[in-house]
Image (cartoon, rainbow, N blue to C red; front, side):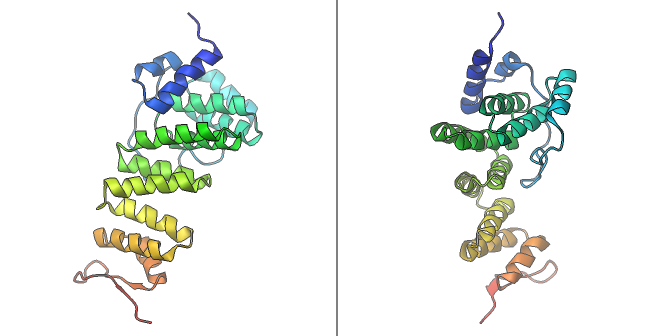
Length: 231
């Protein structure tokens, strides 16, 4: 039996939102091998492609199971507001690379941009729940949402990561940096101080704390509590 476009999209959506078993990927055309997850703010997969539609389609003609080519096409169609094609290629990118957080966030953003707010919320909730199995994956998803300006979803991911691993220097750093970029110095200071206490070998965090008026202990100096400079 040959599946039509609507059949493929229906099955794919169930997998993407509810996390159906891996065999669903075979129905969609195969799956990619797994690899060690990159750091939370790694831009792999989320850098804008400079390839044309024709070039990306040629890549798919050579290897259809190419998640990056599908993702590149999805971004192009998303930008031109060709919603059906954008959705199709976002879904394909995720089916061939289920851990592609950039494509997941992109699909949510596409639904929001096309006016399907309820669907955007449904998919975002599903992806955030799926990411909860790993603090790193949750941070990566949050970062991708943040890059797309979807701050509510980004913050939900960061809070989820901190709640799951309150002693994670990475989780505290990520949410601290988020607040810092948003101009919320109080919360930025709170989480960055906690991250530095957990791992003082973070020169970038130390630098931001210094700019926030916090005296930090550097490695090799007896540990002590972080203190704010007196005015």
